[in-house]
Length: 259
Image 1: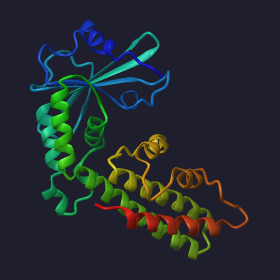
Image 2: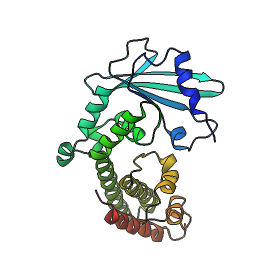
Image 3: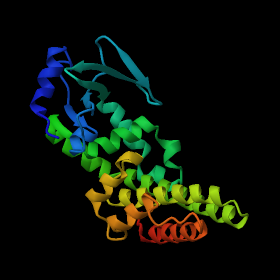
């Protein structure tokens, strides 16, 4: 699907968005990655130095010194647009939460970052700048130099190990149905860890296949990944074989991932 990104800033200006001075504006999400379809939203982040001073159509609140992130949404034609306004100070505070000093404490990702904060960092890494491209490049470097990617990898590996243990215990007790579900969860987390180690840190399941195609990790071919993701080789007559195979694969992938 093609999209005319030159439409974005005029669309914002026509609605008196963004403010007169700001650091950067960029498209994020599936549209920025080239993964969008005709129903995909146009998601735009604007980053300024000062908190939003205009009308507040809606907002989300985070555990930050300035907790409010103002949001607005509308339809232009048949496509939904959404704007989120962040400040450079909020980004700096979020990056401080994923410093190497914090990482060394062993604090899990879910305790250090909220989902919107994690999404901001991973979306900046894959965004399409509309204004302030140099600023975006600088922030991408800061994110990669932080412990963010390592935190995502560590979090996913811990979840993969937990679900492998669950599957093993359930299988030992004859709870095969639960073991199948646990093995599937373990595999998803193991793949997410592998992809995060390759810079693909978006953890949304719906984009996992796209992320595999983008990263092409040597430790797991796309064909093997897709076979497990779709349970192609699962035999209902002998589910234990599939469970054990997936558990072994998860353990093997965990050994391949570097934090």
